[in-house]
Image (tube, rainbow, N blue to C red):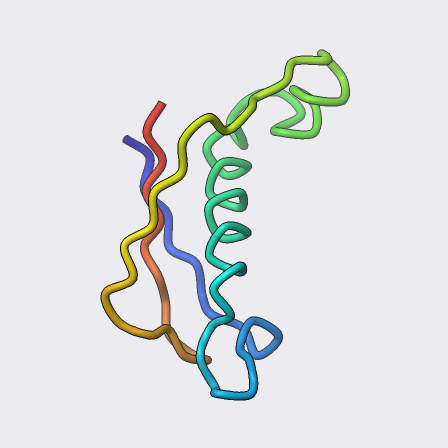
Length: 79
């Protein structure tokens, strides 16, 4: 399992001052890119350079508490 932290930025929150739910999927994709960052060329090198796709076939999110600007969320990726 790969684990990374992601800060909540001002652009991520909505008028209710919490992270808009669709942003959570972006956080997951950011973590996926970070997972491949140790490869030569990183995620862009893998997908664009080597033409290897990495489709998401399952995504699970547990909403336990709202995320707010300034929070840091832990994102886990399992392959």
